[in-house]
View 1 (spheres, one colour):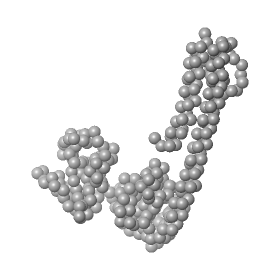
View 2 (tube, one colour):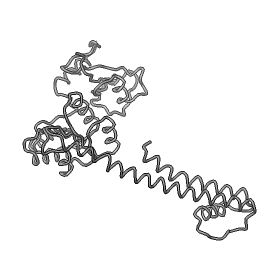
View 3 (cartoon, one colour):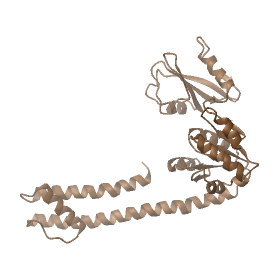
Length: 318
C-alpha cells in the first residue's frame, strides 16, 4: 500500500470506527433506544453541533457522551492533521523532489529520452544504465515514476506526447529518443514531434500493428522495432530450433543473449514475470503449451499449465 493510500485509509476508517463505537455504546447503555436513535445521537455528539438529547440520558450515558465528545474532537484533529500531511507531502514531493531532478536534466547533453517505463522501457533503461549512457525517462503513471526513481534514474512525470514535456526532457539537445509506449498512435506522434523539434535526433520507435512501420518512418523515425518480433529472423530461427522435437535442451547462443527454457512442472502457480525474475532473464519470448500451441510474447500475468515450457532470453556469459 502506498503512503497516500495509507493516509486516506486512516481518514476514512477512524471516523467510521468511532461512529460504530458510539452507536453500539448508546444501544447497550440506554434502554429502549433504537439503532437509529443511537446512530443519530452519536453523530450529533461527535460533530459537537449542539442539538439537545433525543431521549433523557442516564448518568452512565452522560459519562459516555462526554467521552464521545473528547473522542470526536480528537478524531477531527487527526483527520485535519492527516489531510494536511497528505497535501504537504504531495506538495513537498513536487517542489523538493522534482525541482532538483529538473535541474539535473537541464545539464544533460547528447542523452537519450525513453518515453514509457513499462515492460519494454524498463529493460531499455537497464541496458542504458549498465552501459553508462545518459538518459531521462518520461512516464505518465505515478507508480512507474516511483519505481524508476527508486532505481536512481532521472524521470519526469508527464505525457510524452506533449511538446512542453519533451522540451523539459531536453529533446532539443538529446542524441536520441525511444518511443516505447504501448500505443502505436502515441509513438507515432512522438516520432513526428521529436523530428520537428530536433531534425538531427535519432528516433527509435516501438510499433506493434501491421503496417505501422512505414507510417512511423514517414513520421521521422529512424528505426521501428516490434518487441513481438524480438530482433527479427535470427531470434525466430533460434526459437524454432529449440522447439524442434528432440532438440537439445542446452541454451542456444544468439550474439549477446541466450535462449533458455523453463519447464512449468515445478512452478505451476507462478506468473511469467515471476519466472523471468527467478531466472534473472531479460524477457519472456514464448510459451510452448503441452498441446503444441505456441504463444508468442505472453502477458506478464499469465501462468503456465502442467508440461508447458517458457522460453526466456538471458544475457550471454562472457
